[in-house]
Length: 303
Image 1 (cartoon, one colour):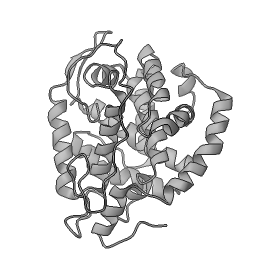
Image 2 (cartoon, rainbow, N blue to C red):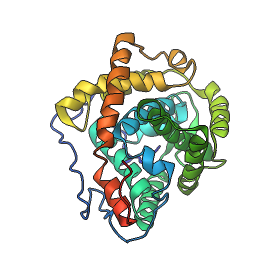
Image 3 (spheres, helix red, strand yellow):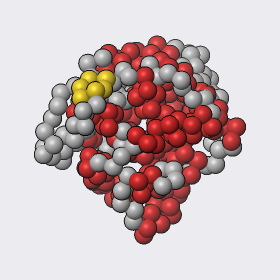
Image 4 (cartoon, one colour):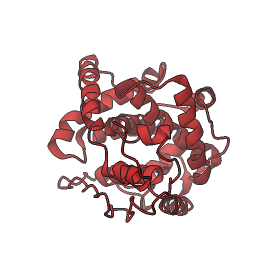
């Protein structure tokens, strides 16, 4: 549902390409693979701006990796979203490209200048207009269904913010509320309605959607794919199983048990030891997109 790719069904038995290369990060003045110059125009804050919680949270790849997988688990647990994502994207045949495109969209809408961010939102919306169908259970769906758009928006923000809070640095209750309030503009631009702007409102949405969340073999297939696929090569593939366990453990309450997710205590212990250290290392080398955005505003990335 978020940043869907070419809307063509693909066979479940196809293997992901083994020779994909990691993406090249853009320079401070250069273009990234999405064709966006993050350094211009000077003084354009984009959708959030340098004082936002979003700019802080989305600059850490550990928060994006752990939170992103947790968000997709929650999306795939909803039958209509699951069919929309799995039947109309390239996730099951080319997961690396799908993950790269999703990450690119997050960076553009967070750090890109206003015009570029809106252009990416418009592009995704046009793709969503072509996505509709019926789930195997007989439920009709469309990618532009306001409830589904809101759920997808909520799960992404919930995942990124909670992963940052757990593995990078704690956020105060006020900062957590502010993060959701900041994101409401993006959610509304994508077509979400009744967009929550606080922790309490997000929790109310989780309570509303929980009865609709169910386990499914596609969730297991997704976890198998992301456990062995990484955009940063061999090192990433070693870390991916830890990231997956951290993502499962991030889910609230009894959802891991409800969704019958594989919980591996030893692997989770390793993740809890390694990921905070990696997050600290990553904080010292923020993405070029973030550095260019701060420079666009005449600022430097907070240390």
